[in-house]
Amino acid sequence: MDEQEELRQAAQILMENRWVTRKDMPEEYLLIRRLERPLRHFFRDRCGWPLLVTAQFYKLEKIPAQAQSFMGLAPMQSREDYVLLACVLAFLEEYETGGQFLLGELAEALLSYYPEDAFTSKLNWEDYSWRKALIRVLKFLAEEKIINIVDDESEGFVSAGLKDGVMGGEALYEVTSLSRYFLRSFPKELQYYSSLQELAEADFFTENTEEAQAARQRRQRLYRSLLLTPVLYKGEDPLDFLYLRNRRERFINDLSDYLGLHYELYQNAALAVSHEQNTWFRDVFPAKFRGLHDIMLHLSHYLRQLPKETLAHPFSQEEWLEHLAALAEATRSGWTKEYREMKQERLSRELLSEMQAWGMARVGADGSVTLLSAAFRHEGAYPKKYGKKEAEEDK
Image 1 (cartoon, rainbow, N blue to C red):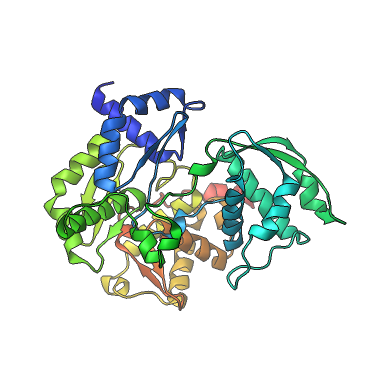
Image 2 (image 1 turned 60 degrees about the vertical axis):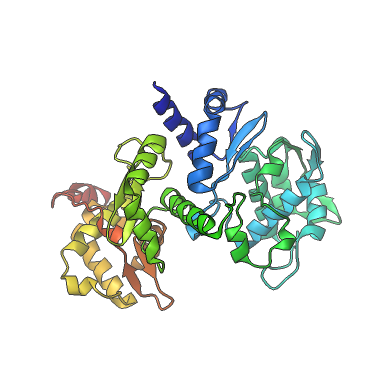
């Protein structure tokens, strides 16, 4: 493996992992350590992302250009889950690495940590859903190696809760060295920011002139969007796509040399994609053995057969469901059993949620569906007889 291939591999490892720890990923850790200088320069200059380094781990702060719904943490199921997560992390700040605490101590402390406002409901351990949420958060932190589970009888807490101040089940946890590095750091204390916009624009790296600063921010915003979102669409600032066209060769070389990606630029969209069947990405489209992705490919093929004037305006909810019914009638025999038997309303919700995550559709407040250009980049169709035999066998 030559140096460029090693650099590409190291950059990919940083992109796809929250932590690269010396204990759990020793070979990867040493590879990044050897190439730390060019990696730090690339991510700092192109993306504005700091590379955090300790004796135990590397962490690339992958800050998005704009937060989007698909960027959430999968185990977190509600706003309250996120608030609980932040409160638990605040609790952990009181402990040094290796410090231990009991579930009961945490539960009691969270009653004072948890905020009371109009955006979240009141914390109450007598409520089963709150107890379940806390254990869900703790399991997530354990999976992220922020805490270690030393002794776990927390199911008793979930099922029985607190009775007369006595825990139904106890657990013992240990704090790791990663606990203070999970949340993003900012250049200054949070109290000095007055809006979410200021937080979003917070930058560790600045230039000497306003012109240079504006150029840096544009470059970093575009690289971040290409690397962290499925597709970058032409927005309100026409200079963004002018920049993407004028620096086309740089984007081609950077994405290929450092990440093994191909740069695609169209009239109103830009993408960084992989042409390899087995990529380093954990989440890809279309994914093998993903029934919903098969339907999305069928849908793209179906939509390509419609008159252009039909696609020139958003579909109303009724029109969308009519097209979905026509698609199902034509191709359902090739779908997996789960989706063949799924009710149309649920299928529509799941399909639109996945399409929005991949930048293929936008759903309006009135339920209207606007199809975006990424929806037509891929298409797929099975032979006419495909799936009929399987469908008959399921009956």
